[in-house]
Image (cartoon, rainbow, N blue to C red; front, side):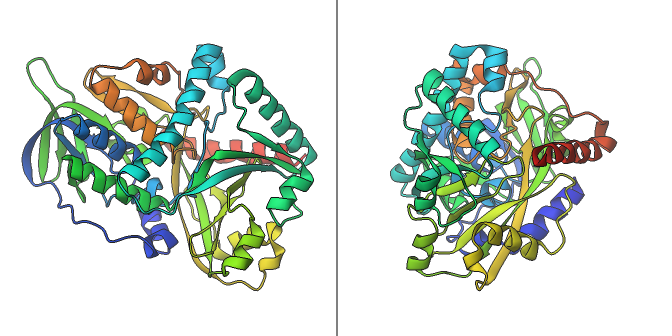
Length: 435
């Protein structure tokens, strides 16, 4: 865990998001004992979303964040807000049936609506831009994308997904790399750290009590006649409910959960500002873009007209050598016309993936709920997850329980071998994709 934290600290120092973040509010660390209806562990998008919902309904909420709000994946990610799930709809259909899968798809669309609603209601300045595209690099991947779109139109009433042939794709993206794609006008992209900080401000304004630099060391579920207790080095929270929303950063607080997710590093560069005309020529609708390769590229334009390009992944938790140069080479494969452009920032972080890439929501005990496993597809979904957890705490658990029914397995290999096993497994998938 300490190695992961050190890697995270090194990767946040050169973040374009940190360099362009709005002023932060001061949230002191927890000192002494306090009482709450709900204690939320983790100050990312899922935890803050739950805190906002609960506080708006009159519950006393305390949020404990080990670092600063938005320090983890919520404040470092690619900024792409997408419908659906990293696992697509397969696990939902196979485990829960078509009707439940359709409900899950509808909730992922609701997640985008919720995000836009919160941006408007709470005046969160986070540079929202509508539009998200998925593009194909090879004919084989194009066929898979076409089949996915047809299935989504047929089985999920997702008529808003617009098919783009090669010419239509190239009319929007100035690259010869792609042979087709799909446009979802309901998706989009944001400055994720400013969005997270905006949610924190909204939760505090609603009455939630926020603490930074308050690492949780122990969670003790409630016993008969006693409340649950969440302990830090300098204090504790006695509460009726605990929500664990720390994902890969929970450490030893919940070992049974840690075995069901793996930290996967993903990395991004930002170029110097290109100027509006040059930026608009690269992505003419300024949508967020990602391809459908197993090791995918994803990119978008910032509000000040930089190219933000991401994609290189690490399954070993080790940061790739010469990160900026490696990422720049990937960008030039897509946009060789940027060869004269300087990279100003290179950063990354860790997303929490599950074995089947499906989200993992559930209960550790009667009074301890958890949210994890967004698998790199969580910018919008985390917001909905927090709302569902808040609904369950308030006695309306039906929607939360749809996700809680999904079965998940621990990664093989135990604590010592599961990372090497994952590295070998992912290498096999990448080799298979190249054949």
